[in-house]
Every structure is written in C-alpha cells, then in structure tokens.
Length: 327
Image (cartoon, rainbow, N blue to C red; front, side, top):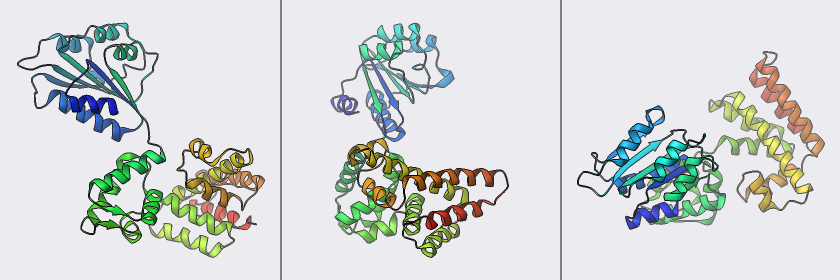
C-alpha cells in the first residue's frame, strides 16, 4: 500500500497495478486515490469496467489507443475474476502495454501462480490488503485521533480498542463518531467512549460468561435479559456463547501447550490484551468441562433448529450449564 501511495504522491505511475485482498476499506481507499491521481477528471482517457463487462478486445483497444491531449489512458478493472484462472492472452496484453497506459485491477482474490499476476509484477506492482493486526489498527486509530487535534486518555483508548469492530470500515465510522462528539474538548476520556461507542454483543456475552464462571447466575441472566430487551435475537446470543466457549477451549489448550500469549493472539486472531482475559476466564473450567459445554451448545442449536426447543430455551439452558460448572 505504501508503494502505491508513494506513486500517487510522486505522480509517477506504473503500467499496471493489482490491488487485492480481504480488507475492502483499505483496498477501496487505495484504489480511489490511485485512479483519481492517474486519471484526474479526464473522462475521455479513462474507463471503469467490472465483472462480465471485461473483454480482451475492449481492453486491448482502449490501452493501445493514444491518449487525447493527455499523458496516459487509465483503465480501472474491478472484480473481473481474471486472477483466479490463468490466461496467456491477458498476460500477453499486460506485458505489451504501451508507456501511455495505466491499468488498475481491483480484486478480492488473486492466485500468485496466475500468469496475469506474474505479468503485472513484470510491468507494475501488486499490493495485497489484509485485515490489520491489532497493533496496526491501534496505530491507525491513534493517528486518526491525533490528526483531528485530539488526545485520548489511556483508559479511554483501551476501552475504545476493546469496543471497536475489527473491520476497518466500521472502525473508521465509529472513530469518526467519537471524534465529532469530542472535537471541542481537546481530549477524549473514558466517559466519552462509553457514551458514543456501542458495546459489541461479543463483549456483553463475555461479561455473561464471566458472571457465570464466578457462579453469579442472577447477574449472568440479568445481562442476558438486557440483550433480549435490546431486541438481540436469541440465535445470535447462542452463536456468540458457543463461539466464546470455543475460544476459551482454544486459549486453554494453547496455554497448556506452552504457546506464548503473543503467538496465541495471532493464532486466535485476537488483540494482544484479549489473551490474558481469555486465560483468566478459561481457568474457571477444565478442558473436559469446556469440551462438554461446546458439545452441549451444538446439540442445543440442533434442538431449536429442529423445533424440539425454543431458541430462548436453548440459550437459557446453555447459560445455566455454564454457571453450574464453575469451580
């Protein structure tokens, strides 16, 4: 990504770019910046194609045509699927692009063994956009807050990172809401984060399990009834409870195997500060108990899907079992 944005800054563009990967926010941002910088407002010498609209005849004719009172012809091709199956014809087209052409591919998937992928590397650049690591997301949020002229207290920042969605698009939207709310204060405190950022269902379910693990059945069920009052669908609660049990089991087994917390965070796709919390909560249960709870959760899901139980009854039985098996 840095290489592409550096090209944008320098105004020096390669013949071909491939932007691909599972992180749509960053990919869209980079694609927009690149296309706008290379094409500007020139609609005569630029074109956008997607999916089934991409034909070899059109793209070859477009890029081979000399630009009309401009430096280059810019072609943006989105979601073509061309990087899934090799095509010698498209690869040959890219390798013979004239100096006056700039082709930008935006794809979700790309096989690095693909002939077209290799052709792009010969004449241009390929950038893969993956979900940011917890550290990358933290740095990005801090930079965004700082760019708005704001500071944030340490406890507020911890709460913010615990509450933000892990995808960039929604994290960006929530951070913007917080910045707008505090722009006249100069500093963001814990109350600001609590007021603005909605607590994720995952966090509420984690608190439910914490109460259950401590033997506080009434408190655990109170949190559950709060979710119901907020119109949270019981199947969604059951899904998150099941997922929480899986994470506790995985964390416990990784720790028993001697895996460091930093490595466990990568394996479980969690932020670093989450692993100690998982380990602490998992210590309330044995591996055998967690496996039994996971098996019961799956059976309860089958039972409500088959009509043998209501969805609410399935959730409540699992929550009861979670509390009953605390130590």
